[in-house]
Image (spheres, rainbow, N blue to C red):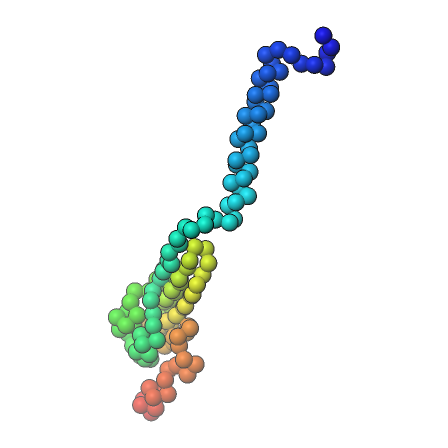
Length: 137
């Protein structure tokens, strides 16, 4: 027998291991290639996270409101920073899968217990309203 031709039980085992390895790797490689595509026909729901804050709610905010009044109008903030107790953040995000469909943010700033500033998507540029400023004068 020539030395270059393996025969017997060990050659048969190495071939079966090779075919087993290839038969496992081929489906895994195929699934890995399709992972970015997603399954067709799978329904994905819109996921809403955070505080729903609308224009009417923001329009009710006036300077000199207390924290309790702001919490009554806007609800409990999603983020109360432990390092900055004077700031509350209201964030609202709508997602479809990994894609953001919409995002809104509102930041409320206090001095002590009194509302002094509101920043965000729904706030007009001249907040506080000029009516509130002229009433105080």
